[in-house]
Length: 597
Image 1: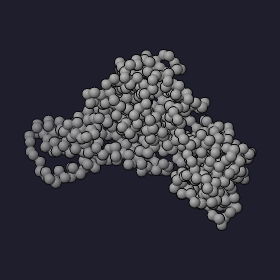
Image 2: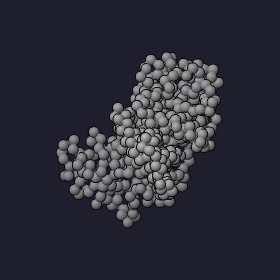
Image 3: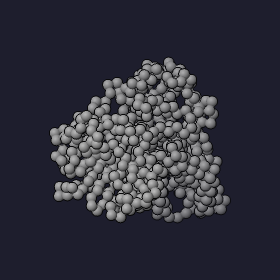
Image 4: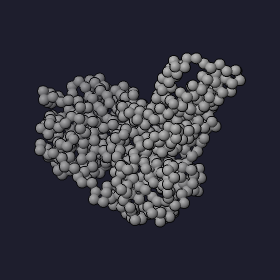
């Protein structure tokens, strides 16, 4: 593998450099390198999370999100090392003269240790970056190749010829519990540090999905267990109502637990968890991107990956999806702002779950309420079918909105006054004009993502568009089980942003549609038109934060300006409200149906 050669070259070059600079100089550098590694690992989580939170959702610098965990490790390491070297060079400005043999032997030995630390930090940092799963031919964690025992399970795989990443994990792990011990040691929360980033990179499109979340992208909702007393055989825990044959499962060490129990965690993902770009809009996870940290009776911890996910299915009822094969990636369906999923783990007897890690964000499990004990796998399956496992036994109560100035519109008419279910852009443009404006196009010549402005006189309309259908754009792209709802908020419409209800609404709160089940759908864009411009934003993976991101309307330009808000909703639902924050602008009564495409 290519990375092996790179590591060997780096280790040899760094070792040789310090071997020829003398034993004492190499020893001082080793001390600085050890300290720099400790500082970098101590700051890693906080610095990387800060970078992810700061990364823009769109635009050139949006790449920072996918690189943040790597940058967050390398930058503190390099900066600390440079600072320490400057200080030590000032304080210890003279060298100790030894004979050549001592300098070469001990200089090489100290240089080798510095090389291992430096190269190990680099390898771990690269592993956390949003790169192809097989980048440089190195996959330290991958699907079990023994299909008879653990098909779909993630296990230890490749190991470097010079295992610099493993050395960092073990070395600093021991230091965190010894000489450099802290209340929350590295070894406790990252027992498999060398694997964490690479596991997170196992995703759809050969590592193309998001590998990092902001720390507010999800919330741990609840948890449950089955057979917590260890009385249920492992094989029974690995069954469900669809298949009486146990799921094939092994742990990270390629071993099947002898005894244990099933632990499940329900997580609410919000709009910040969506995939972005032309194929955005959905929450997408793999079994490498969700992991549990469990602590044994001896105080040692281990990493556990999920065996299954529970989520809403395209057909309506919730379903349970097994990680029982390579390349199983779970996508959300529809367009809800909040996507609820459950993740199930097999916890070996003698271990207690202490944390979950979701795309880099670590959540201590003491934040969750006491787990609900489910009597059996069959009872779990019944609660999945009824929807109560994800929503709770009582279900989520519907939110009440301020309706003081709400306009009521009949949603059953065709067309509905001020709203419609349609993927039409409302104008036709050439593919050249669409691309030059900044839109990403899907294969079927629809707008998949982007924001741009077009000139009605030179870029829109049939007179400015080729007759060949393949060279024309007039629709937005939507995914399976989705529908695009367009709400007209122009001055002369019931939902006008100049109306009494909208004028007094906050400008920094989400703009949403709400269906009859109480599920919310945040606006993902708009279409603004006047005599001089057509401004379109269609960002399925990045919702609008509020009216501050919407072109303003003026009472002095009534009849000149048109504005439509765009919402991706789940196909087949009935829309009851158009709201801004807690204020209902329009109530559809009867509701507006999200018709098929």
